Image (cartoon, rainbow, N blue to C red):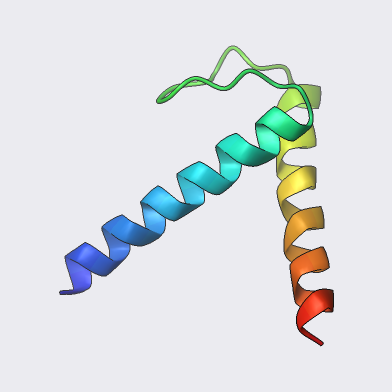
Length: 60
């Protein structure tokens, strides 16, 4: 059961990452994305954090 839960979590995180990348206009590929600039990678991570904070605030 633990392996299934972990896999589902990874899949959800991957979907979340792709959604955030799409929102900031960064073209992510499935798998390795080492060709991204630091700015592009940072904008994806920043968008993910922003969405998590917004989601948390809505739950308050």
